[in-house]
Amino acid sequence: MSTTDILVLGGGGREHALCWKMRQSARAGRIICAPGNAGIAAVADCIDLAIADPAAVVAFAQAEGIGLVVIGPEAPLVAGVVDALRAAGIAAFGPTAAAAQLEASKGFTKDLARAAGIPTAGYRRFASAADAHHYVAVHPLPVVVKADGLASGKGVTVAESNEEGIAALADIAGPVVIEQCLEGPEASLFIITDGKSVAVWPSAQDHKRAFDDDTGPNTGGMGVVSPAPRLTPALLDRAMAEIITPTLKAMDEAGTPFTGVLYAGLMLTSDGPKLIEYNVRFGDPETQALLMRLDGDLVEILLACAEGRLAETSARWSKETAVTIVYAAMGYPGTPVAGTVIDHIEAAEALGVEVFHAGTRRTAAGALVAAGGRVLAVSALGADLGEARSLAYAAIRKIRWHGGFYRRDIGKA
Image (tube, rainbow, N blue to C red; front, side):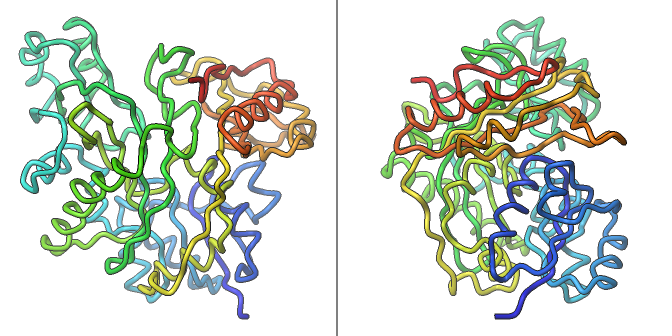
């Protein structure tokens, strides 16, 4: 079996999980990650590269004989890195810039949903935060204020008062989407597609608020359970039929067919699943939990998807439950405290978990220190939610880090 040299773009926990899983494949040749982090360095070669510069990525891939480029974060997708790679004849996993609008513009997605009859929250679009002031000031509460652009999983405020809504607008520069607040448990649904075939991946439930009991500001995610406890097979079928399939059809009819991974954030309302928003790349920290459950060959799946032959592959998924707990730096999601020392990760992993690095670096003396907001993601498998949760928390307590915090209620019933 021939091997493929792989370039992974990104440097967070998602990319660590991708590199870790691809390293297990017999198809994997060299794995290079840009920029990577201290954890990724154990399973891939980390390099400096302008990952949102299509020309720079193509030039590097050609010089190194890269056979597959896997794009982790959204910025390179929106910048057109996939378009440039495909034009150069290099296999790339991800959507084109035009298809990436599903994440790049919340307003684009809301308009598409309305035109295609996809269930979602009522909304209004505004060209600027100033234009939205009066609407937010009188809107029934709670009201959801969203920056209409890339916000790294943040940029969303669920305002319980009109004053809070106005304050949220002050932090937004650019277009705004104001939404009705939906009620119900959330779930994340992932599919991958080569534009012809669709493969449904397991669901997950993210925990967005920074603190216990779903309090505090929204973050990029503080922990995940997979599968999502309340996304039943019947609700999954409805979500595919009413949300995912019409979206893919609309994108295809617009001449911008979607390829790669489509991640739908869902609200499971009393009226059925409704679309909150789309991401056009693997979620973080959902990827860490999902890949713990994947028994198949990730390199073969992603390469086949990039080459338009997804139908030739199949993924096998563990029936076990995965729980991922994010260990974040003090100050996150505001200004995180950097440079604090982290130790005893080996003691955590000795319990049988994986500790994925999201924001770490090594000092000149070799110490592991925090270098981001979300710093580690402790991921465990168990026969059921209780077992996985207990193992994840037992492991995270082994880590010695005085500069971090984590939620203590991830996966709590």
